[in-house]
Image 1 (cartoon, rainbow, N blue to C red):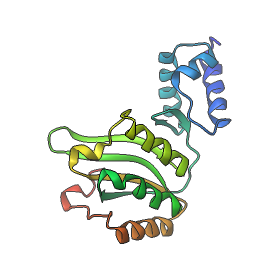
Image 2 (cartoon, rainbow, N blue to C red):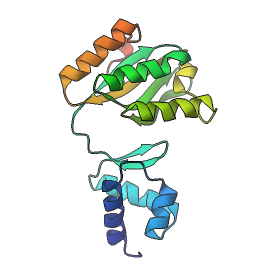
Image 3 (cartoon, rainbow, N blue to C red):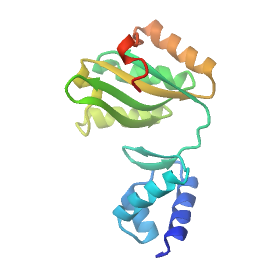
Image 4 (tube, rainbow, N blue to C red):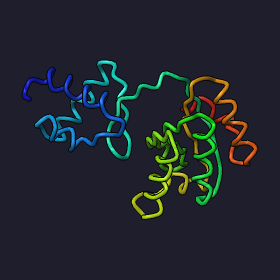
Length: 178
């Protein structure tokens, strides 16, 4: 597939028909191009208005049309799964994790965790040493962008995190940071 417009349309159809992320390499094989070409196509598609999100396992076309909110949490490494479960069990999804390090600055990593299976895979990656949580560099403090169908659901998620002792106050200098 050499025509860029046709190829990008093909890529969008692949994303629409997939429930799981598709890696740049896999998409390149499907489209008959290199991973680098796919990365360029993703940038062009995003510019054209497609909400393509990056995950640790590849790219996905996001169809979430709900609301999002930034929350600040604090917990130990051992409580990571519990924090994520509270969010998904109450109707939310974890879009990303963010930290503000005094030396390295602001860092964001996509998570796109929507269910317990995603949590299990994420925790497995941490336990096997494939990755390390960003919260480790900020002594357990971190932010999440979470999404849900409505504000009421986000309020319920915050309340559940607060009851568990995970939700912490966003400080005045952190307001509007993200």
